[in-house]
Image 1 (cartoon, rainbow, N blue to C red):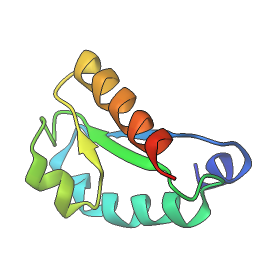
Image 2 (image 1 turned 135 degrees about the vertical axis):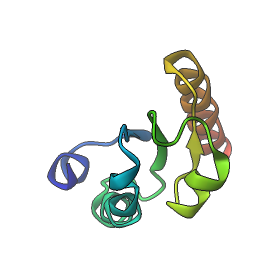
Image 3 (image 1 turned 120 degrees about the vertical axis):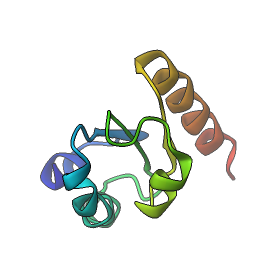
Image 4 (image 1 turned 30 degrees about the horizontal axis):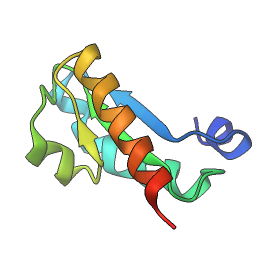
Length: 88
């Protein structure tokens, strides 16, 4: 994953976590994505059953957003990319 984000520009990287036992690995994974990303302003969104749209869990994992389903994820991704485009 870090190799992929280092070679290509991504506005948003979305991760899904289905098992709460794996939540502990998300902060390091997100940190690695940010550290290696070709886009220095990459946004990271997390979702999945273990997160279930819980904003506090997303914040604890250092994610920029969370979503409850695929349609919600698309809306959030579009907003995040729009915010990046608006930055000077």
